[in-house]
Image 1 (cartoon, one colour):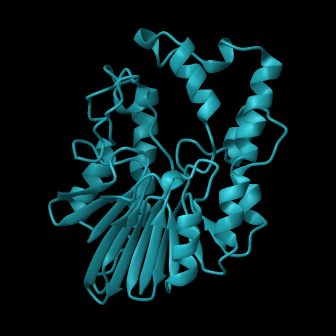
Image 2: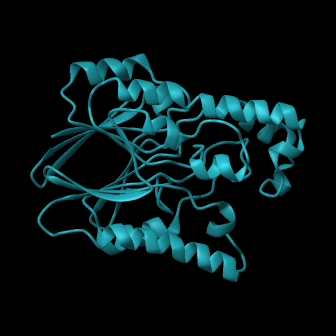
Length: 278
């Protein structure tokens, strides 16, 4: 069985990746999320916001409301292109969402009259979106886990009832899928944010206030250490396509899909071979 994993497409789908999918026999496509193009949003965030108080400042406070609404609608519209291309191959696609995807929840929360990731995918023929899920696919058990724990949850200097409650919800969702694992088949764990303190979560961006720091998810790491899936695959960090090891688990960042990075997995029984491509 051959699986292609791609994520962080951010409004694009490289022609080079299309050709690979057309030429090679791909049985399943997995996506680590982040379909929307946030270029304009990020430019405002990095150019206009005080980096010493980065988390508390909002982009919408730095531009006019009508300009902000127009930008958000363009961001949501940008998800359509990569999803349409993914749907066109007539290959099953299992996807999670990341931190830069406008789901039904985000659209409703911000009272935006627009499409959403869920609605776009619902119209597709071959794509299935998972908040969290377990799929028994041929010789493989696939665990899919969407979302991103915001910084105030990951780095809260002082725990509060709200932080504890939300982090417990994160763990409960993970427990729900990991509890379904059976010992007879290898396990692939697909998620968005890299596990903490690996080669895959180190920021290398001088413009970022977090440059040089490990910014991954401690709870994701905790579950990898506990259950040790054969392979754990993430995205999110554009600059860290590569691999690392957590106990017996091979951890892979599939790369920045927008620029043509992706991952090929060949699975034969318990044997899993990987090929990171650029």
